Image 1 (spheres, rainbow, N blue to C red):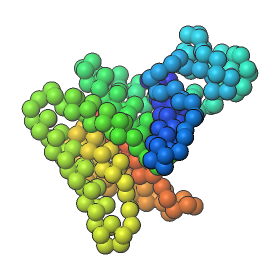
Image 2: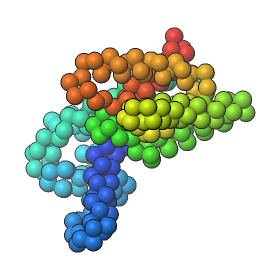
Image 3: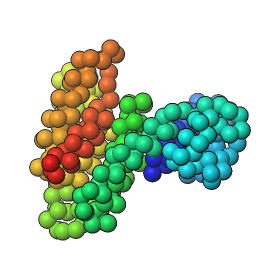
Amino acid sequence: MGSLISAFLHRWPIWCEFHWRKEAHSILEQTFSEKEPPSFTSGRSQCTHCNKPLSALELIPIFSFVFLLGKCKHCKTSIGIQYLILELATLIICLPLLLLNLSIFETLFIGLIFCCLLTISVFDFHHQWIPDELNGLLILFSLLLSLESESLLASSVYGMLLGYGGIYVIRFTFLKLRNIEIIGLGDAKLLAGIGAWFGVSAISYILFLASTLGLLAFLFHKNRKIAFGPYLCLSAYIFFWNQFI
Ligand SMILES: [Zn+2]
């Protein structure tokens, strides 16, 4: 999953940007001759510098990076340390789930939800944008997790609606009163996913914690423009573990 997340974070923005440029050229009736970059799911993993496809031995998470001493086997260019950090982070975030004695079904889906939160955090931090595909997966995994009982599913659906509605109302109010976009709809969809995971009762706690963390980051940030997604994800992660402590 850590390798998959790395590949997504690297390829998805490049692929989207290519298609936006292509569409813009089409609207302006200009010729567009750039080569399409590989999509997230197509083609084998390759060195981002010399484009040589990577063999199975070069694709073992964490170990390949260590054995290759962080360099491409062919062109000796340094492989970004971010790949190792993401693989380690995925392991550190997901592995403690095994201590909880949950069912295989729960462990699998909560693990997938953790991976979604990690991807969303890094993506939003770098691009201040959360792809709908990631939020969609988060909502899907959260709803599937709640299928265990009817009461859980109802709370999950209400949590999803309240999560989206809560941020939508904040955004709409500021747009009308101050004409500023204080928060994006990506965050609304993210809170919908988190609401679908934990249900209605968790929304206020998570929103309050994320706002407090975001406010602290805002005070120390030079550009005064921060992505809110990572704080929502971190708050959801804290809320999850708080249930067991
Ligand atoms: Zn290379």
